[in-house]
Length: 354
Image (tube, rainbow, N blue to C red):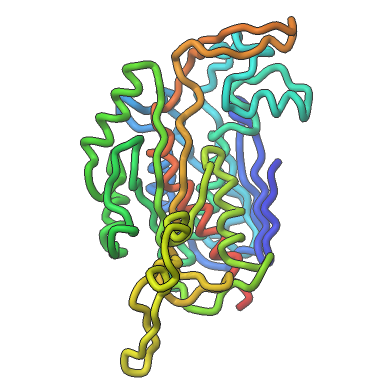
């Protein structure tokens, strides 16, 4: 079980990739009526697609709720998902042989595990219950005028439109929710070609997901360990494939002069506004009222079909493996709603009680 203990909400995610069920238990949520149809649409964005690059493991991912009364949450709830399409036999040849860049070897060192079937509790499968809680958080935030929207800005070396290139409207991103195979604003066909090329070569490819929070007013967060950036990053790293997080221009700021990077302020009538948003809507760990902009690096799916070098922990010798089974060629595509979920949960926890 993995637990997020926030200031106001608590999230517990349990289960394993090949267990009979996975699920989430939540407490401290505000009382409101959820739209289960809208939640289902959100969860469908995380599910395996019919595209040639997606895993062939198809799961319905229908949440079974406990704690709702006529669709209304009253603080605490739980939801489980039944795993319906488990094929543990695909991993028989990997017993005691950790897959490179998976959690397998670290898992062995921590718990002594030798059966790495499906990745266990370290599997990306556990992002399904994360998205249940995150999808509900998004609905509540939207009822307060706060929108958390993510999109693909890069697959491999193929770049699409980025907030770093100029402003992106909320409406542009909301439109991407409608079943887009490649949830990018531009260069979708080129991104798809990069994914298919990697798949045809028995390989995988990474990507960049950007997320923008619209409508959060100034004043949320705090200094040092109470900073909003730290809270969001902490939540984002719950998504297994995340290997880097930037706010605003991120690492590009290190190449700039202060006179170039600073976001100048000015009065527009009675309101204070900014001439740029290089800092990503957060100063000193506190929201400044501008959109919060986040860039997230997603690693290539480590399960690939090429032969790879590893070790045999049972016989204590070097060996090679070829991974079989069902795997995504670009997990970044399905990770977009996971990023939205992680950010939404961090924002929800911060605004409650304020």
